[in-house]
Image (cartoon, helix red, strand yellow):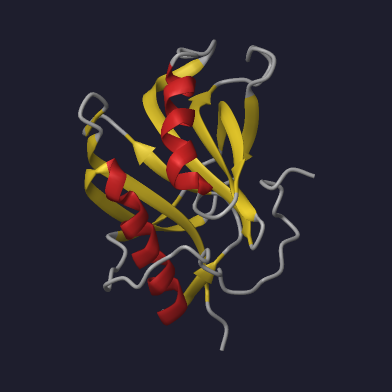
Length: 179
């Protein structure tokens, strides 16, 4: 079973990875209902702080594979799923119209419509870990909990890929905390 197959994950609050540091307060910019998407991309599993060193190289390898047949637009996504004490899976992806035309070895993932808390990270992508830490803190303190479904970063037209900085939206699948 893929770490991204989290449909049967226990309904408990998300546990931040051990390498997370204390953070400041953050709140979602908005709540939104996401739409169904088919994603194609490069998938890798990371443990703890290995992600800090591995994800930039994963993005470099991914961008050499683009464009994919049936790719929908230029927006790219960093998708996280299956997070637990053993690590998580990260997928550099683009939206595609069909899985059938993707080259062999390319990961595939369906994202179903869900309720999301949408956060903004502005600045250098090298500091996005701090924004994620703040989001974990927000989940621990708030009236929402992780839905244990894929969360994703959206690198749209306002993100400068040469300077690796700009606006990144972070979509976190959430549910209301039941008291």
